[in-house]
View 1 (cartoon, rainbow, N blue to C red):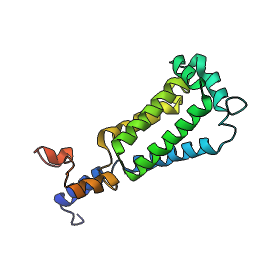
View 2 (view 1 turned 90 degrees about the vertical axis):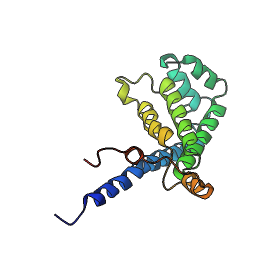
View 3 (view 1 turned 180 degrees about the vertical axis):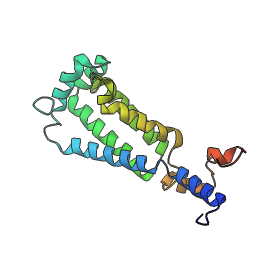
View 4 (view 1 turned 90 degrees about the horizontal axis):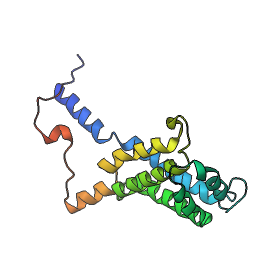
Length: 178
């Protein structure tokens, strides 16, 4: 054996568990910031009609969406909807990356992904070809756990004396490492 004790392995496992959501946070944060900036900098997208516009996209998915009334609402002001969507994606991404109000940011990301799944990618067949459902499911662990490490939320909690809940394996006594 290499000299590692069982307690060292348990500590290593606990450290890995604390940081397990960090790659997901980085991926979703970067992806949403990029998606928002891409929308705001694409002159074709920010038009009510024409090739590559938000209006054309909304018109093309209206009849196949799960909630056509949601698409109709966006079509009342397609450019305004696109700008609000893009700004929302950027704010969600930045909040997720910084870990600032991380659960709120993750809930916003889940809401954006849910609305896109029910409208834009609903017609994907089979359903798992639509990426918005995967994004929705990816946000849920962050809604539940927040950003307990490497985050402004953790820094704020440390400064105010708030302690996060202990990890599940430390919260309740049990039989020990397996």
